[in-house]
Image (cartoon, rainbow, N blue to C red):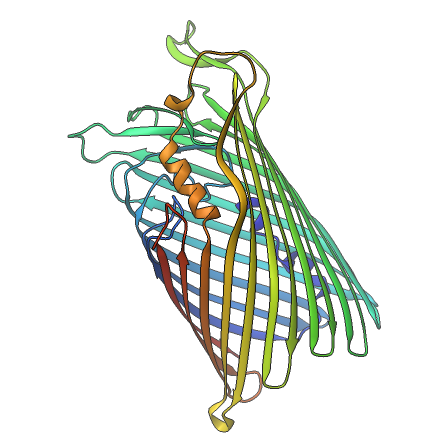
Length: 479
């Protein structure tokens, strides 16, 4: 859920452990989806396109890896999306007016590893820049940057292999609002935690917010293989700390965040049978300080002055646990799995405490059939089915920390809170179909085409008869 913590969770930082062949490939992808079963932030209809290139080569023992990707997204009727990733922080500046949105992303990165006997040392660097914009008043424009640098070391023996890396992460994002049509007043909302809010009519003097995060990452991979038996475990840890403030002169501070994410995946494979067990735990803490706007006698400008240290106002804990058994034969492969998910969120607006929690259970089945078409290449047909079952949950429990005779409903957006909760917890049945065609062209050259179709239907009270349908197409050329 947290973009800074998850964007670099892949094993690129453990590139010194890579043992595969040299390759180079280019790809083009397109994804289309639409329907009423969507999150509060999601577009009603969206199109995503991607162009990319990637290569691994070995020169005099030095292993080099590089990639570049350009992505363009277009969506309709998007709301409340003040940040590119709304779940990265409990503090957000946004508006409620639906509008069409676009997003451009540029990603590039590189890794290198050098062998020293059974040891390899290396380093990985990743960079991503993005521009997000809504094209209807109030119009927000977001500019975002993510960067990571992670050196690593690995040991590769006859049966045992291990890799370790540690690095630094940084993320910045700025959102700026503007209004083109001034014939009617538009409102900006400051969202805190579980849709607690304050709002004000739009003013050009208060339209920008800046968010900065820094963090650390660590990855550990252990692998043992002998004959047809493979044991592998990949562990990842991410920690970030960040702050939000209004750009300019007024010293307005919205809040700080502390985020910690652990993830682990264990694989046991013997012949054509495999067992995967994975879990993820993410915790986010939000902190605020007491501020008051006063006239600065030195500049005769109204600024915000801080009268307290940071204190915790928000806490969330998200956990996922999954297990999957799979088999892989000459023509058939399949798997059966189960995923357990829990979420707890709390926001404190003294003297009240707002709590949201739920638990869901999701079984899934997959089946794939492969066909050999001789000179025409190879085909495969894959099917997947899943069902999400809500176990329990509460969208908005309000308790009193100290006796008070006030109601919190005037300061909480209950409709979007219920809409988001229904999306996260409603019973949902989904199915997908994927067709793949691959054709070798001699040497390392080859082409692969993948086409997919997916459909999900919700059965909850607020999302009854809501569905979402999507399709995808990708073309990959290897050389």
